[in-house]
Image 1 (spheres, one colour):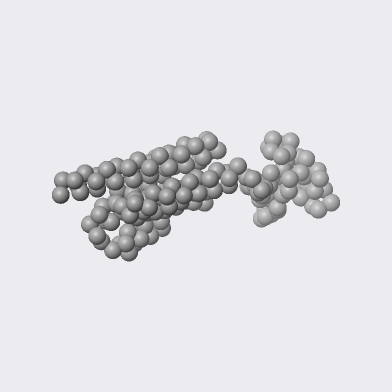
Image 2: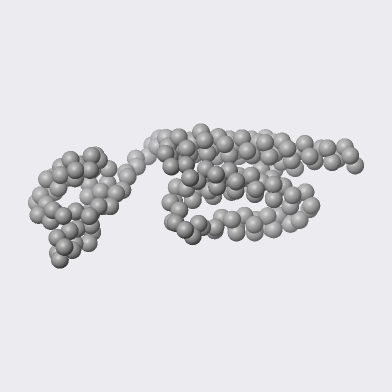
Length: 192
């Protein structure tokens, strides 16, 4: 019995260590490199670690894996009510919630090859996507613009030049939204 307990404890420690290393590689090595605002790193690592231990305990007491996925579903629909979470951060949160589910299920089964492959694949995929290999991304900014004389189609080049000069952004195109003739402004979406 003592040998079984030591084996279970070692398996839990190894699984938790691997899970934490993968979470740190993703948050510190991939996410935080491109994100100056690191407010979500705490949540990513806390959710990841907590979910791993909860699911590891669930699998160790022979509960149905459906309970684990139910818990996973609850966490995955969780939203912070104080502010809207950007889609990129929600994606990272989802990844860092899904990984401990995979890790907690595969670790006690001794499927270390599958475990390493799954974690490695996710790390490589996130890295490739963050590098933009094969993809072009445009940032989008909304501004309120007061020079209504430049929003006509004939003066599009002047509008783009004015926006580039005033914002310092490499504006490629612009979409004109709501026009407020009472206040002589227009809502523009800039793509750079």
